[in-house]
Image (cartoon, rainbow, N blue to C red; front, top):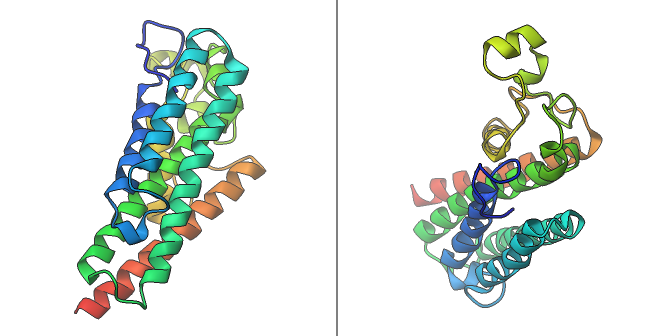
Length: 218
């Protein structure tokens, strides 16, 4: 979860860090009544936690890096759930305009995708550091299509040492929020099934809120 380049060790982490900062930015852009705590607090805390996360990774303190990564993921998850609860509470009060509520619900849908992509990326197969230590990805919580290819097919496709990156987990999270179920990657681990159920439930709640508010506007 740091900002090194591909020439450094393993998978570049800048996409994961950018996703977390984007979550903080989205929460900050919500109306005051839908923001848990002072405006900008989540973004400041995320940025503050990413600094020691970056330092611990560069120093090879991978256990500390993993713990900090879990901490920042937990922070953005609490912020998203808090904003969603405030959005549900705000619906009958009419304190915000229907247009503002629609924009906020759409923003939280995007946040839901980014939050769970960050969790999948952080937890699958022991996390990014553990995946970097292996020459290829053959075991994990998700059965990616590349994992079903035989050795010759992988070599022919230039995927002999393929390992999932943040984009793969973002795609997985997007599909889960859109289809409300797994799509191209079957789920193997119990913890991943629980997280996917939570993500689909949150996405469904937001979609229902969007539909209800849209009907009211019409």
